[in-house]
Image 1 (cartoon, rainbow over the protein chains, first blue to last red):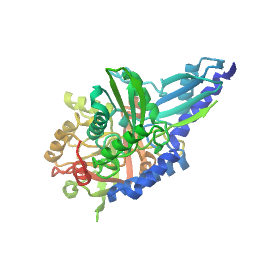
Image 2: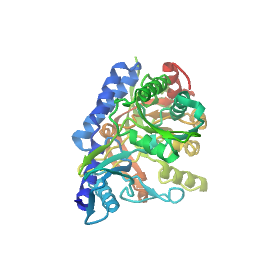
Image 3: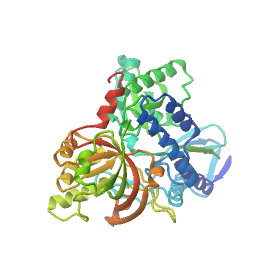
Image 4: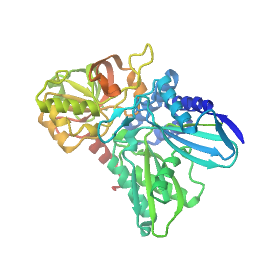
Length: 281
Length: 187
């Protein structure tokens, strides 16, 4: 067994929360620069330029990319030979979020009793934590501050198996069309296809951790990603919904086997401020 | 060529008449922030016949809840939130004298109708560019509902804050028009 101190985990999470909120990934920046050359709308091109400028300011001034510093979504891959000592894992992560959002001047957006009193918890806790076991003696932590503008426009559908690939294209197009300018396009579209309802949505979100523009390793899935992207960009919504040829930067799908009666499809939308950072301990 | 004009907030009625969809503006002057929770309280105050915490007459609301300011900063990041969530409250606020709103994303048919009726304007700014937009904020103070934290109402002084006319008093809608111009295929 390899021992990892809970305090080391807390410190790592606190740092990841801050880095993710100040630094837009190179993959997202490259994708924005690329579409700046192809965007048909002059206003759309200008908006894309402002988003790139925003990323520069955020990085230089350590000012959040977006005032919506998100729900802290934390993905863990826990090596089965790892033993956490000096505290429990979930408490360590929660403390990391508390410290990161406090020290980093990040907005605390989480409210308790969401259906009634909606009282801000004051420190952006609790985070949403997804843990899975993995071989080895390492602990991988990815932090994704997820803004709600795009999260609110996400959707899950249990399609009939006969709907097939076209059914998936139609679902995503309808979802993005209805969302219109609200989720801060250009979007990154996470798709979870197959498994069960809850697993499809989790994998749709995890697909957003993939580098933007890196297609699925499976050629058939990669083709589906391209098909969906082309149809979505034909909607004309454009950067921030002002009209244009760039409504999404990428479609990132994860396909899993499912029950013979099912075709679950989860669509998790990510705004252009696609923030996530990870570390391996 | 796209227009680009400097305007002062509160916006004079005759200026509002000139603000047509697609006009780009740089706003200077005073705007008040309000998002979900503050809207609900303003709406409930008006509904009870109480005076809201500031006079809405002729004013501009910015749908924004900033991140905390670091020492020495006026404000943290300060970009718009999704305007559509305020739609259920907006016609009442317009009836109470509100003249301009700044946010992101499209508005409901009811809001667009009320914007025409009360000769008001909805301006869209750059969603997700909170660090950039914060540069245009020169002063910020809490004037109401401090218990709401990031959702408290702030009085902001802004200079050359960039926005674009998204819904005008003539029924124009930037989101519909922009999309129609570039749409190659429908859903």
